[in-house]
Length: 404
Ligand code: GCO
Ligand code: MG
Image (cartoon, rainbow, N blue to C red; front, side, top):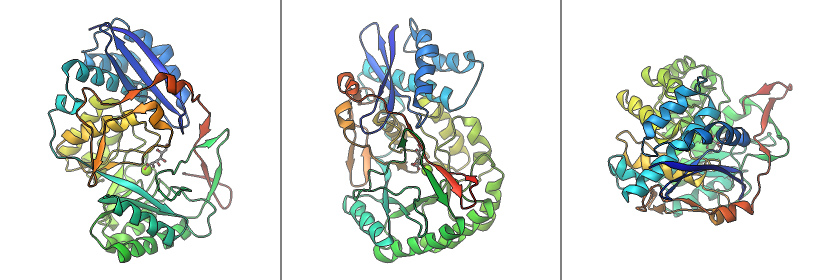
């Protein structure tokens, strides 16, 4: 089944998304998410200039072979741009295979291993009372797991805080040039236990509580944070330190039983190997769209399963609905599934992406449409042209650039 067309669609319905669309000689189409937040056009160009010409004439059924051809054939391996581009091809080919077979992708991956996919939502607030109201909204909507972030007093801007009461519209990317935030570790470390105490005091322990540190602490500070949060029985703290320094996670482990989740900026199994094999983390958070697609993500998850590490895939709003659907198909099937992030997407995304996934009682299901169950409306996409946007930059009070 020959590939006759491969094209890149860049659109901004609420935020920027890059989508690869592959068409076969029989007219079957498949789509994959190629969005890399703040660096979108690099992946778009990688695909258009270097990958799409290689796809024409290839057999769309040979997913593994095409993966290896793109990975090994480029000579320059790994990296977010390359692995996001390969992921888009891979996911689009799984979509095609599902459509040809008349089966949802999760059936091709072995079928459902659970009834639905546990997700966590994003509650946030400028103040603790505002955060508590947002947590209440998530629990009312049936969420069984909630990530909480509150603005640190004294800091003008804190990661993870949106301007919207629904909690779904937190969007970090800024137009034209990046905004700059100021960060103070001391204020943060003193404040977070107070936040978790307030949440548990008001809502009890009957749901999972998560928090994203977003790479800002040193190992010993992360150990202190984890220890101070132990009474609140966190599901996890995420990205406590910048994960390039992987041996640092040993220090965190020595000081706390709070579970650790890492991986949203990883893009290959090689990035995950040490943390998983040394059992330094509890959840691996790589995403389908930044880690080489369904084919490669399953290898990461199998490696994790061997070492008692569960999955917790990244699912921020800058991963498109195509990516979210692909993640749900994988999540439904893997033995070591842990949880899936669900941040939601900004309107008018539904004009552009038509989805089939459903949410019931805290669990998502990818639906039973053949393939991924997501489609892109190209005419609608064309109404929302790309707008350059950047993630913020963080500085300490003395002006030093810090991890954002
Ligand atoms: C998360 C992430 C995001 C990232 C974003 C960057 O846990 O969802 O940390 O909020 O900041 O995906 O593009
Ligand atoms: Mg995160």
